[in-house]
Image 1 (cartoon, each protein chain N blue to C red):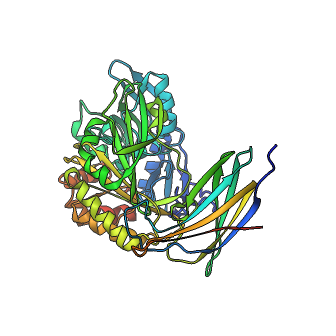
Image 2: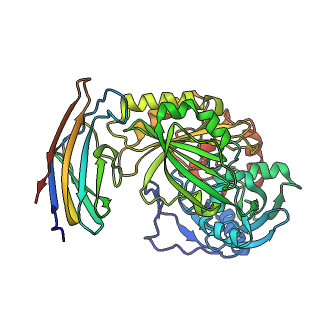
Image 3: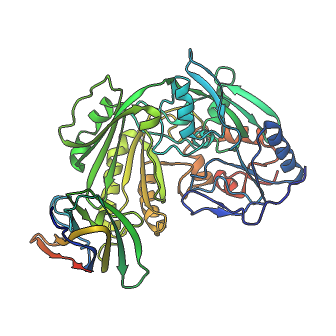
Length: 124
Length: 406
C-alpha cells in the first residue's frame, strides 16, 4: 500500500495577484495559482481561508479534490464566499480533511516579458 | 377588521440581504375573502399593501411600512386543459414546485430563468425571463388572471375577453391588484439536452448570430478575470444542432425542462440587468467588457451574463416591441457594488436600455416613462383600479412618478 503523501494544513503567506495582464487570456492572465495533489484514495475537501493586512479573514472557500487527482485553482477565480481583490497582499491557509500536497505559482504577465515563480507551500 | 401587529422580530429580509424593513403587519391569507378584507382595511386606514413572493428581488418593490402580504398559502394546481396546454395555478406557487406539478399533468413551462425559487406571480409581475432568441419572458405566458383590485373588487380577466388588461397585467409589479390565480399558456411536457462549453470571448462573439439562431435556448457568461466565456445551450434531444467547433464542451445533461433549465444558486449576489435592442447587444457587451477590464477587474470577479429574449406587447415589459438582449452584471452581496453598477448602468442606458424591474437600477418617473410607449395607458389603468393608492408605496410612487395623495 502506498504511504500517505502530504499534510492537512498548508500556508501561503506571500499572495498578491498582479492587476495587469498582457497577452492572450486566459492563458496569459496574471494570476496566483494553487495546485493541490491528492494522491490518497479518498476524496478531499479543502477549506481555504484568506488573510489580509487590514481586514478580517474571509472564508472558508470550499474546494473538492477527488481521490488520486490534482486540481489547479486560480485565486483570481474564487468568488465563494467573496472575490479576492487583485493587486492586494494576502495570505492563504488551507485545511484539508486528508493529507494533500500544495504548490503555489505566480504567473505575472504585467509586462510582455512574462515571469513565473513557483514554490511549495509551507506544510503545517 | 383590526390588524394585530406582528412580533417585532418580523423583519423582512430579501434573498440577497440588501433589502430590510419592518412592516406593521405580515399577512399570510389563505383565501381570497381574507385578502379582500385586508384590502378593505387598507382602504379604511390609508395603509399600503405590498405583496411579497419569495423575496428574490433586490429592488424595493415589496417595501411597505404597513401590510406585507404573502401568497404562500395560495398555491398549487387549480385546473388544467391538455388540449390547449393551459393551466390555472395559485399565484403563490413557487416555480420549482410548479414544474413538478405541471409535469404531473403532462405539461411544462415554455421557459424558465436561471433560478426557480420565485413565485409565479413574482416572475410574471417583474418580467422575469430565460434566454432564447425565439422565447419570450415568463410574463408572456399569462393568458388569464384572477385578482383583487384596490377597491376590493374581485375580477377575472382573460386574453380572449380582455386582451388590453392582460397586456397591462403581465408586467405590473402588483400595482393593479393582488393576483390570486394565474392561467398560463404552457406546452406538453418536454425534455431538453443541456450543453455547456468554454470558448474564447472573441470566438463566441464571431459566431453569436449562428449560435443564437440554431439553439432553442442560448446564453453565455463572460468571466472578467479570464476574459473567457461559458456558453449554455438547450435543445430538444431529437434535434442535433450544428457543432460549435470553436468551443470545448465541458458538460452535458438530459432531462425534463423543469429539471434542467434552472440552477440552484446559494451564493448571495447583487445584480444589475438591462434590456437593450438585440441588434445592439454585441457592441454594448464589448463596451462593458472593455470597461470592466480597464476599471473594475481589481474588485469584480463575478461574471457578466448575456441573454436573448423575444419581443412582446405587455405595456411595461422591458422587451416591449423589441427583440432584446439582457446584459447583467453581478457582485458578491458582501462587497461594495454601487460604483461598479453606476458605471455599467451608464453604458447600458446609452444603448436605450430598460432596467429589469426586480433588480438594481437607478431609473424612475419621467426617465422610465420615456422608455415605454404604453406607460401612460398603464398608469391610467392603475389609477382606475387602485383609486386609493393602497398598492402605491413610497418606493413605487418614486419609481412610477405617480402621486400618492389622491
